[in-house]
Amino acid sequence: MSSHLDQTLAPALAERRAAHLYRTRKLLQSPQTPQVMVDGKNYLAFCSNDYLGLANHPEVIAALQQSATTLGVGSGASHLVAGHSSEHHALEEELAAFTGRERALLFSTGYMANMGAITALVGQGDGVFEDRLNHASLLDAGLLSGARFQRFLHNDLDNLQSRLDKTEAARKLIVVDGVFSMDGDCAPLPELAALAQKNNAWLMVDDAHGFGCLGKTGAGCAEHFGLNQEQLPILMGTLGKAAGSFGAFIAGSETLIETLIQFARPYIYTTAMPPAVAAATRASLRLIQTEQWRREHLNRLIAHFRAGAQALNLQLMDSFSPIQPVVIGDEARALLISQKLAERGILIIAIRPPTVPVGSSRLRITFSAQHTIEQVDQLLLALADIMGEVEHD
Image 1 (cartoon, helix red, strand yellow):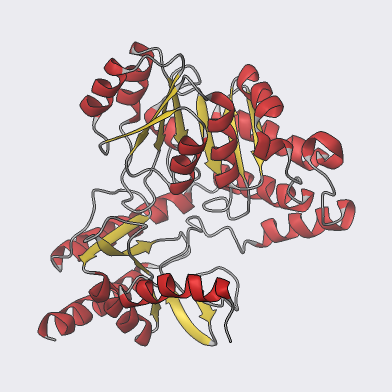
Image 2: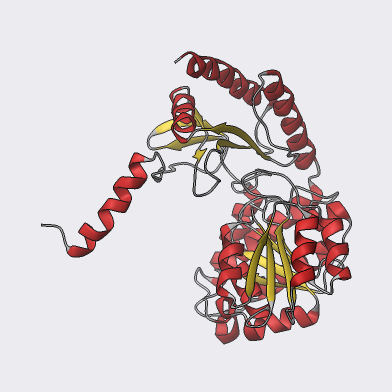
């Protein structure tokens, strides 16, 4: 006999299954490379955020192993107790230098970095203004901050300005993704920076999907758009995507970082990441800066795919990033195409509501510097065949 808890929760699960929105976990049994083993089967994968192919790089692995031998595995405590190691400290200094900021502060995850920064910077009597397509962590942080939370239309500067005109908030925080995770497009950061300064507001950018990929040296959206610390005072980046490691950081002024150390609860009350992970990230950071070919090859792959997809009349988004969504629309159809690709040995996940708006379900295709042009052609051929099959079903 099921418990009252199970009886109460089960209908919502059944409803999600019936709406083709049920999520299941796949079991990865290989390193994160274009060729993966999932649930005992081999696939060519186009669904990883390992954009530069560093998650399985021998130098990154060696750095982690060496540091674990020297410093152990667990950090043992929070940064403010006894967990802030020399590897953490060196990584923060290198991230600050790389992003052109005075200081950087490590967090264990991107979700925690966003939650920590936003809730430390604004509260009751303040205003937080977020793009409607921001990542869930940004939206959750805005809601939980206690500030008046407003969402403006995607990349719509006029809509944002009209909201700023009406606010009486003591502090005004504008928050956007640098590269939007489900659409792959960029925020208009130079215009947002100018708008923020004009309105005496602070600009915060989540550069999870730009860091490592954009900019001449890979320093991300700020470098790509040429924005300094004054123009973009609160820069967040994650280390589990293009950097191939784990964790996140906030970069900015000395005063900003000291404020987060004192007031960001997710930072204060969380065990520090393993020092070996910080050492691995330091190795990947060096590779990001010295192996320019990774970004150059990635850009060739993206251009090749977009040209091929447009020839097939696939509905693409306005994206020059490694995120190249193909919009399908209907949830069940997106799932069907994903399943047919899997039958051909190609792994791409169907993204459905509530992650994306109803009616915009899509195949979220992502590229890595480890992919080849031939593998992209294999994907395009499979899409051509499957789209033809689905149209005639």
